[in-house]
Length: 165
Image (cartoon, rainbow, N blue to C red; front, side, top):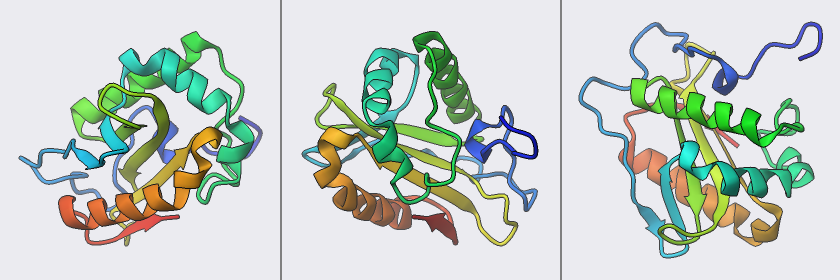
């Protein structure tokens, strides 16, 4: 990280909402479901390391061109072990309800085609900052995935305001 740069909220070791309230209400169960037959979500974790690493490392330029990632420091070159540590952190955040990162699959147990990050906003007037990407080989799904995720967030999540795309 260069001088003056701050980490992304989803890079933080312990992200907390700027408004000071819990990120999601007590008892809220983060949804895990197929969004359509070719777009499935499941919580991102260490078990996805090889497939996740291959997906984003094959698509770095494409991800940086995706809305929400244009000025981000990630993706950047990392080793598989560094990626594993990153996935372990995202899994810990999910378990602790500090942030929710999902891998996007093309079928149950299928190929990793992207990722969705749901984290507290640093703006106290906004509940959550959302970003998503799809790998370059599935770029044709990018707009569809964004629309599907926006609908899913509206229908299944307890946020009044979000920033996405």
